[in-house]
Image (cartoon, rainbow, N blue to C red; front, side):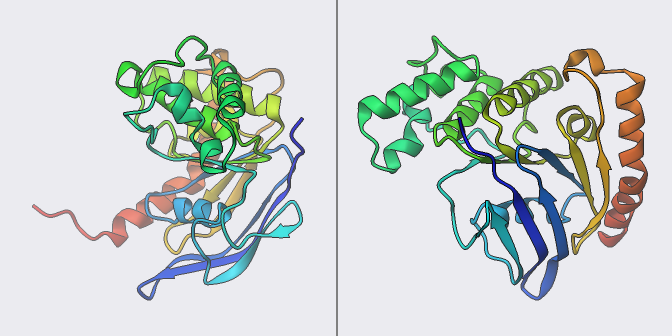
Length: 263
């Protein structure tokens, strides 16, 4: 079983070309906790995730995972990006095995791990299929399976289902939640969908307009398993409205910063 890991983000700051993108961003993710990050476009959500993943460096502040400072990519952190990022010339099996292949793991061992990961995301039987033969949702499942092969104790997901239609997005999002619950990994999930954040998360962090900062936090206390039955429920709507209230004001500020629309 994968051990759980706590994530600590402490007073994170980042600028590009003299323009501050993140300012004094602090939050934590408990061991095995699913936390979503929502906020207006351009507020620095993806930048924060990249820094937590060791793919970007902060100008100030610190990141700590499982008691160790983060200064670069970490072997037990699985990352899922906005695009499925599958290589078209590799089968689903070999796409999933890629992370282990780059670490020098032998063919038999990495293929066995890839088969287990594909089974975990419901893609047994598709090992020999190429990305062009898979739907968008299936390609994103391949990307999730690849992240699972490293047996992550932390999973970072950057708007992973944004390109999918609403129905497929719901199915794959719930698949992610099911897989995460079996691995006990801690999750930081960036999304523009408030409903998606509520459906998946233990807590939702709300970021303000650039320079991004955490302006509010909502704990999601929904009893029982999460599933499609919650769509349209009063419980889901109440949480969605609770998050939308502070987010609406920040979204309006973001529009005003862009200036008036051109004729």
